[in-house]
Length: 283
Image (tube, rainbow, N blue to C red; front, side, top):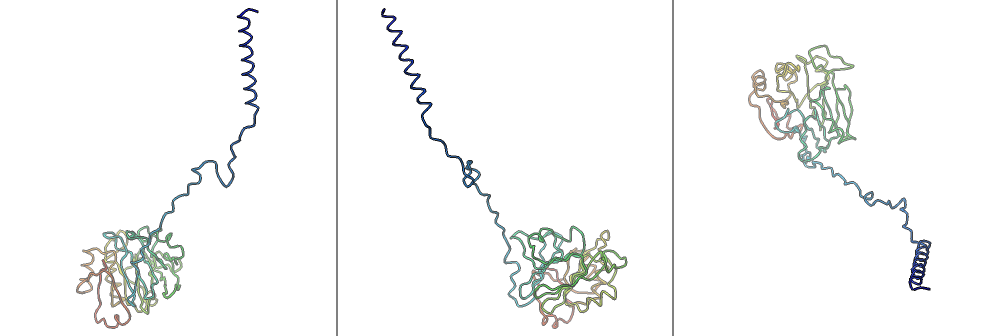
């Protein structure tokens, strides 16, 4: 056999050996990757939990240790000055006419929420969502008790039309707190209160009444003078404060100073000691 023939046979033998080795490797058992279980997803990112959003509550604003009823404005500064909080001596919180509330230091707790009329600027859906257990009354003639406070809705009118007792367009809310009778006339549009309304309201110790003039929305400074004169409350708190309207109202009542202060703390003893009506603007 020639030398070239021998070399060809060697090459063929080497190629055959390499092929057999490759086949053996392909047929050998291989370690399989374990399948992902239901408790352990294959994609690691699926195990990432969403971040919990911490809800911040304003726990200081309604802290009442005075032993008296506390009333303060809770509207965002420089807004419509309509929303008031009435806090009993035991800490029960009423928020009346919630709108543009001041959440700068956290959400506000409420046990009772009332709105006198179905207008966007007399209600705040956010406060209702934040307090799902609160008793909510919106322009409804009803009476109910929550803890140590009683609330009564008295039918009224947003205009000077006849009051519809079954489906009133506006409601005056009367709050009985710590022996005090506090009334908020809301968006009252009547020229004056009716005999029936005066009967239901009875004695009023603190009246919250708008000091504004917006005839387009049935808010008239003349009405404020009439209502304040009719109810003769020892303390009158100005809501929806407007400087020019306030001057007209104070002049019409022949009243003196409209005092400014941050909060009102009052009890029955304070009321009995008042000899002439006090007019207050809660900042």
